[in-house]
Length: 405
Ligand code: HEM
Image (cartoon, rainbow, N blue to C red; front, side, top):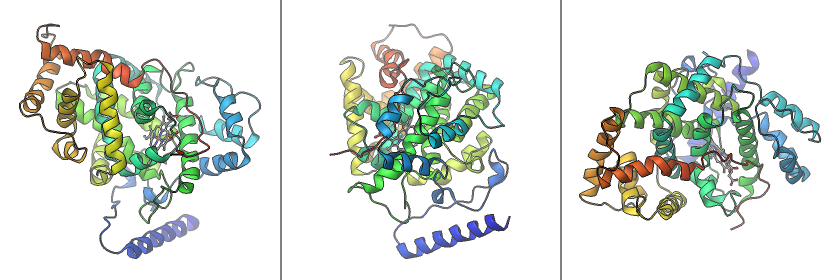
């Protein structure tokens, strides 16, 4: 339409202008990924780093400015189930927004969503480790995310703060998913969408916030897509690398649950990959090139390793976690995060982990047969559970102030 093409031209011009103003030195992302590969089957001309959340952002900005956030958070605390009615007493504009935002898209496929939950049950332990250690650690080398998390409200609960995206992923499988009226993922997603809108409003007011042409406002659609790829795309890459066999139907169902998650978090359908091939084509364009160390991310990663090592002095020794991180994320990222090398152990682990997984898969592994593998068993058994607080839903609230420190 006329308006769309005008908007497209304008944003394109704005983008080129911003890029030119920056001059050399900053690597601007490219967006050649075709919208025909998206769940919408068609794409506009706006690149995802120039899109935020047109519906949620004004709603939450008004809410924060009205001073009603604490009361609204208190009201929404009891709203947890997909099929549950909203509590009375919410401001009308918020009530209306949530009623719209909680609708699944027309392309949601219940049978796929059910299969995704089955897949999560069947593969829960590997998924927990992949979400926890791969996605969770990776979030510390996603600069926009690491900085946003570091300087936003978060509170004193560092573990919860660091692990929130990983836990969101794990909960898709453990909290009844999106399709079941008793499930919790619709509510979790809508609340997360509101929290992100709050961060967009608040973070630019923090003295630590560094906006630039690359990121005039926090948590763009591109940022969400980047984090999205650190979740299902990276998890699937890891399962394959470890030798876990995933039938195509289960892989597709898993992807579908994440397509729905993206939609419910406010990502436009034109950016959501329709297939694994489309996702695998998008990730190298937007995830891989943005990974980089930041002082904030390095601090978050060090805290993560300390927290995990605190749980159990035996299985979760810090050097073992360091070697696992190096194997899971590779030498470059380990170097960025100041993770020391452990000669011998690093090499042994890179061989032993996939071997352990394959033996377990084939039913040939004998529990307790070897102390090294015992540690792996412990990591599967309680690592993910501790890290992801299994069974304990996140109590997601709309922030109304930044990290005061
Ligand atoms: C809050 C998940 C993308 C920054 C949250 C929360 C969840 C979540 C579950 C609520 C946590 C809580 O209240 O404890 C996700 C998922 C994402 C995503 C699943 C993508 C698929 C991003 C991105 C950024 C970001 C791209 C930044 C660039 C934040 C911040 C908060 C937050 C700053 C608020 C934390 C606080 O209260 O301090 N997110 N997120 N998220 N997210 Fe995201």
